[in-house]
Image (tube, rainbow, N blue to C red; front, side, top):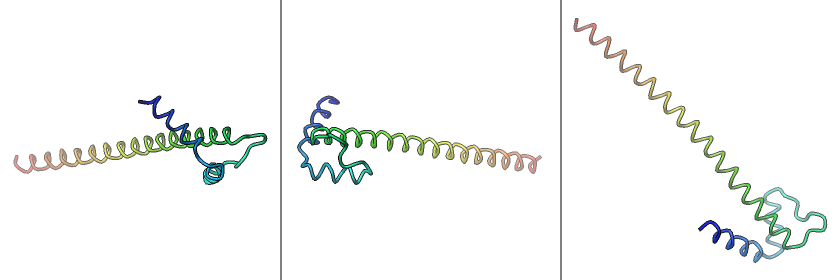
Length: 95
């Protein structure tokens, strides 16, 4: 499936009107037109910028979830320490 999706994506990008391509580039804080750039070049640049944006988002999400996992592990370890301490205290009271 990856190649088919890529082909569909390129036909979709080139099917966008020139105004839509320019609008999306501006929304992504990109220059609307580079010197000597034709509509097909602009559409290809839009597709590339959008693809890079998705990769960066996925990386950021990965970093976030790693941090969350680390926090969860630390909380679980702290809970286990507290349970062991409580169990030891109860055992001392019994003796």
